[in-house]
Image (tube, rainbow, N blue to C red; front, side, top):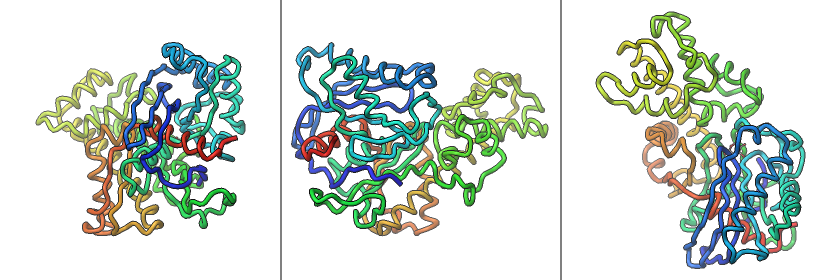
Length: 408
Ligand code: BGC
């Protein structure tokens, strides 16, 4: 549970030009966001591919790459040359924030493992790289993607209670009463009574006390880059669901219950069964499961599949996906109960590829919440697909930091 230093709710009246950066997965996104003050905004953006070698190399090289991408973005926009710009840095990893634009990295997640970054202030490292290139850009805020998602959605829907990411990784944030936040003392100049708390829920139950982990989860955890960390995330997020299903299929193959006991080099390769395959197989409604056959035989290289094999695989995918949605329902229910929102009209802003592309996810989540609270209460909860937290949401946070002189 990490105080985000973001207090109060946006009004929609915010104005100005802000830069926003988003580092969190395959791409680095650089945006120029213009807030127009009437609840509307414009975004210009460019994407830069983050090579795998940068994700596992030295943090200085990653920061220099980010600074060079910002430089390239600004050079293409001569009207910005030499102009002082405030920047919001969406850095979607567990950061222990000490100010709105300061915070140390606790650990890497989602397959990143750059050296010389853990326990360091990632904003200072990037600010130094921007200075090395002589860019007049000041980092006004470090933003978690969940917090950006919440703010971006609250800009137009002030009743939004939570921001959630269901993508490569998973996490949530929510508005907490400042009086209840023990890790932070309100300075005299802050009058708001709420602050967004970044839950880092992916790390829930790292002690392995309550999550019902199976042998397939244990194998995934043992073989991962961050053993015994992010255990809840490893059961619910897009990076992992395909791998859990692959582990279950391998076990069925070993018991001679699938593909007549035959596997393939791809089926035996870690991460080769992507979560996108799992969602496509679950949504395959053709009579002979032809899309499933295509994935298993042509993509995964299984020599021959029977209809019974394909039906089993479809069940496995369904179990893994539905379990993820039901576990997320537990997380959402815990927060909404804590905030007294059950039975009240509530909006949960959700972004991320898993939520976007897995069409059954929302229905499974609702189903589990209805089992807990009844249909009437759950009907009042709206799950909105909230886009562009790392652009619009981050820019609003940079503006708040800038105007209230919050940043160091
Ligand atoms: C990170 C969070 C992030 C989430 C979604 C997790 O791995 O720890 O900070 O919000 O992924 O991107």
